Length: 162
Image 1 (spheres, rainbow, N blue to C red):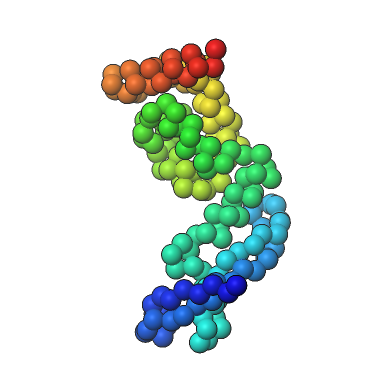
Image 2 (image 1 turned 135 degrees about the horizontal axis):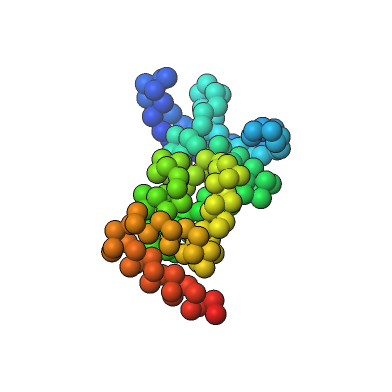
């Protein structure tokens, strides 16, 4: 079944009907080349291909996810879950990790993290390691409220795993 969407096309200055198509393409991310299925909107009037207007990064995000999986890097979802299980904001988590807020934000938005950042995030994924190696030595970077919250979350996580 063919899927269609209608959206305003600036080139034509009017609403246009697009066929949603998929194309298998060879992709290179860093040094790794692989095949991935990309989604495009094809103008029924001109035949020209466009990135989906509702999510122009969808193909790039898909490429990065495959790269992360092939390189055994934490997924974007994993990184977000690690931070959230401690109840920390992006800014506070970045402080404890010793990385820039913008770097962590980019990682949480799908950018491929370095191997060093991946190792640090894996360390943070374990509540015991996170607390002893990162929270305790850098506790002065958090407000007393943030520290109390992270301590409670870690205590709960450690109690559940025991």
